Image (cartoon, rainbow, N blue to C red; front, top):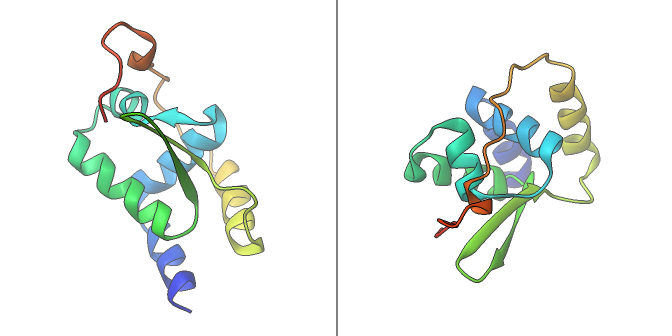
Length: 108
C-alpha cells in the first residue's frame, strides 16, 4: 500500500507529470539535460526525480559521475495506465536541450 500511495502522491504535481511525459517522449536523459530543458535548479529537479523514482515510475543509471533517468520498464498496470493517461493530456513540453553533448558535459 505504501508504494501505491507514493505513486499517487507523485502524480499530484504538475512538474513531475511533465517530467514523466518528457522522459516518455525523449527516452533516457542525463540530469543536466533535464535541468537545461526545464530551466530548473539542480536541487529542485533532484527532489522531483527522487519522488518519481521512489514511486516506481523512473529508474536511474549511473555512468561515472553522470546520472541518466528513464521510465522504468516494465511498469506495473497502474503506472502503465497512468503514463498512458499522461500521454493524452496535451501537455506543452519545453524543447530538449542537451548540454551533455557539449564539452562542458554533465557533472551530476
